[in-house]
Image (tube, rainbow, N blue to C red):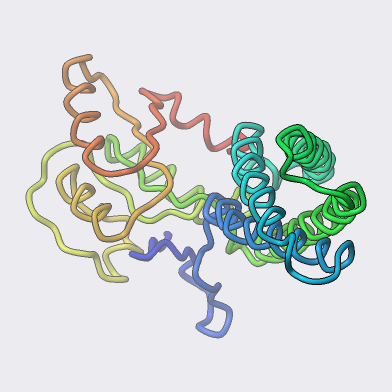
Length: 275
């Protein structure tokens, strides 16, 4: 037996209330949450570098412009390199090395452009080195904190991808049971739904969930996703035509969610896969 809580917090039926896990945390949101902190760090580093390199505020607007362009360039390079992807949690050392290289490239390009354009004046070399050092230290420290939190939450079973499972009844039940009983895989199950139309269904209570009853059908899933988003919908159909699958995809396209198509028995391969 298993329990699927409406907000995605998984616990076995025998867990005592005192042992309940906290609210699940999406690794994707954790990584994307680095963006505003990176912007603040880049500007803070530029300001600290200015204080170290200059006296007075006469030249500050020029270097504020360089910092703004630096933040814009850094964010675009970081995103293109996957620095805000959940995959950085799998290989933190490699991510930190790539980040350091990208930040050096940003500072070199921005300072070079500033000198060529006459924005950076005398003393810009010392400012550039200070900005490079302060920014790199801040960016690495921020990710060190994020990686430490991710490791802690993973051990607690709170860090994982939130999924809803849509497919034929027996398949979604088996997948649901497996993911709930194996939280180390990082999958938080928000609900299981039958691909067949079953009519309206409300949010299930604990007794229904423990007995393995489904949360509803495709229409109920769409309604749930509008108010309780998940990272991914695992679509596990059996014997469906291309026309039927396209129809399901069109419905799921109404909400912002990733879709994994695992037709037939291939969905059960997720039980043994590192997902």
